[in-house]
Length: 199
Ligand SMILES: [Zn+2]
Ligand SMILES: [Zn+2]
Image (cartoon, rainbow, N blue to C red; front, top):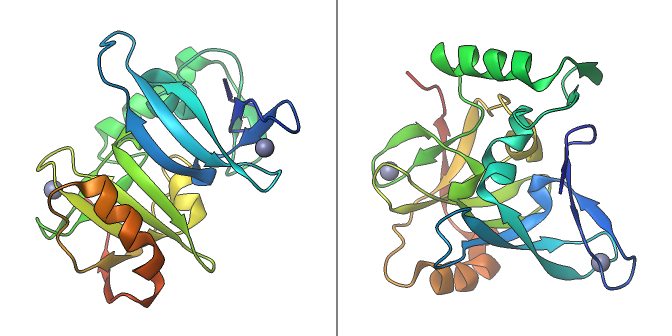
């Protein structure tokens, strides 16, 4: 499903048969109820054929495969070079995380602070001009924030935008429904820039 060489997920497309999309082409992520092991997410993604389709991704593929923790070679998206196998990379990723660097982060609006996060906490991705609206369910406080980020911020592990836009709105109730409504209004909404430096 996840192709570490290309940094892309493979799904089936009713028109093209198969398609490969990056994380930033995901539109919604929803954890499927039941089946605790393995945990599976239903993903709606924007396909290169122009339509959106549904696909399934396991928790491991979502959070760990982009870090090269699933074996084989790994394409370093920063240098466009193939890097050694997973064991070494796993250590490298672990060392960077241990040193306080995080593969992904976001700014939690209710808590007024940046937080480390993994892709499985992403709920909704809304593409705009040059940026991406990213709704994240905070792993610490469980509340939802919407940040405006670059595609690299999502697609390239350990690439964190220095500053992100933060929508000044606290999402309550049925968050998914609220976010879908909010999607249309996002680009006219009020947001402020916040620094993403993690301590
Ligand atoms: Zn398609
Ligand atoms: Zn929070």
